[in-house]
Length: 382
Ligand code: NAD
Ligand code: USQ
Image (tube, rainbow, N blue to C red; front, side):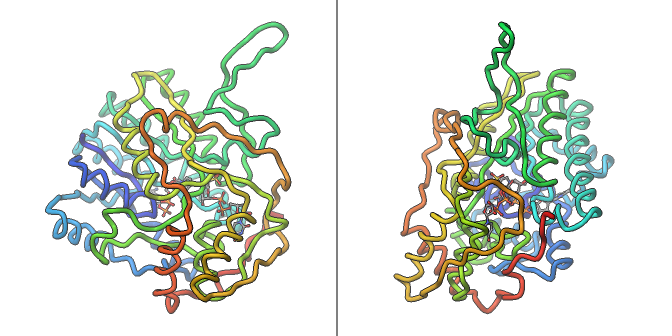
């Protein structure tokens, strides 16, 4: 298939582009490299030394013999998006290309607005470009489990059967997101659902949980293909942050009492889920929603797992229970359905000590790149 991977220079997009290329698909990466600019803005960096995009892609060609096309384009610029669609005529458009950090969206008013502008405008442009230039193209859009929040009932996959005053309907599952970033995903979902209805677009919204891990079979092929590995308090995510904290001997930063529970998945499963979504296109006018995670953990459970594996490697670290910079629920009910991707063939890589050990070792080999001052959170929700 001709597949665009938008956001293909990022943590999820890069290994996905390699995986789809390895599988024989004709892959084009679209990215405006804004994430590298944000690293500069925050004084941050990936723990792993990632090469410039053109060099990564050239290394992939050398290692695999396969071409990945690159188009530097900003999804918020319609002329650039239109040019991509005209030139590539993709059968699937995998859309990772958003600002994806909850703390980043909560820095101040300007960041909240920029987050909304980038994400919602970019997705609207993609929807219009599909309508205008490639009406049969399947949009595979990365949403987030955080769209649902933590309701006191089971979380279904996108839809809820409701009976109200004697009448029944299948309605979009209620959304109670926990940051302005997560809200952008809710607005995207609504816009996509509407575009499917009015223009007959095909779309799959993948409500992905927190992604952990680093390497995939393809990134392991050569050090120049290594994936990015965030640890700072703005873009680093729970388990990966704990892994890097353990590697540098820092207390594990559990926010509040650590009972906050979320869905998680290994980056190796992200790439497979995207393949599954591409191989099973929605019908024209159909808006599909899958929950993309494999296991549920509280942050305290994750910290305890990392603490044990680190101790086995000789790094004793404490688990701190610090003031929570966010506003979120504790000791809440959490039970989310994730059966569709499993029924379509996903075979999960579950979180094992062996896997944690592999990732901690990579972090331990790169501790000199960690800027300790970026580890503790500075952005608060209040
Ligand atoms: P990332 O920040 O590492 O990568 C995002 C990429 O998109 C970057 O390379 C960036 O330069 C690019 N980008 C952003 N805005 C763009 C624009 N306007 N035009 C072109 N390119 C643009 O993020 P990630 O962790 O790879 O996440 C990818 C997607 O998956 C995001 O949409 C995110 O919301 C979603 N997601 C991520 C996680 C996770 O744990 N990482 C979990 C659930 C959902
Ligand atoms: N947390 C800690 N300590 C830390 C970091 C986080 O206790 O050092 C806690 C947070 O308070 C939260 C949970 O861990 O309760 C998850 O936080 P996170 O930063 O790992 O994840 P989140 O902000 O939700 O965002 C990440 C990605 C985002 C994606 C989302 C999936 O950055 O792009 O949408 O995970 S989900 O959480 O399912 O919405």
